[in-house]
Image 1: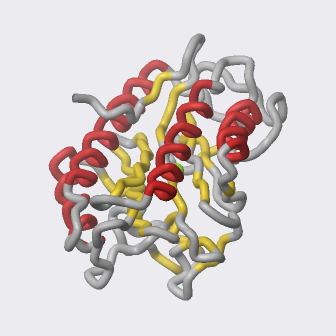
Image 2 (image 1 turned 135 degrees about the vertical axis):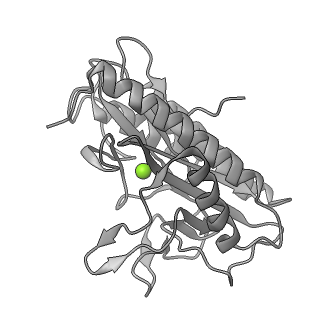
Length: 255
Ligand code: MG
């Protein structure tokens, strides 16, 4: 069952999305050479506290493992779920994906940006910008009457024409009271397949592209997902609301 949000729930989702976008924007501004991913996580906690937001990542359980960070900080070949660490210090030429999910007044927002640390090789910059473009291509396909497959296929096409890999094991998701709800939103697929999109559905759309093979490997920590071939990966995400018309991006940064 895919939940359809009521007007009241949509208002709460809007607030959660707005706060998620503000916190992410603030944390991204702290990215610089010499900053550790632990520094970024400490700042994430501070910012969440300031907005009255509760991290959806901190204490998240997968089997016996409990995620220790307020956000996920994945550097270079790491795709998602990077654990913050004092020993992981950013340097010029790195890229870092910052994935922040949080709840505000019982409803969740989830968003991710991949940020360049100083000057980055052109091929890596292209990976990052194409992945962002794929996010917006997927969002543009999120129209009522279309299916999840329209979103998936729009994202996959952007990867295919740019000769980038699409990670298959990790997908977008419905979002609401819980960070993860039905349905799954894969980053590959066929237009017309999957559940039909209806106004009031809220989804987290999140393409993860790789420079080389999309095959993944999971670190011994049980969380960090990286590319098996050690080439770079990028990840972008927004939380959106399906409407009668074009989707509303709930985590769009405000100025
Ligand atoms: Mg997500």
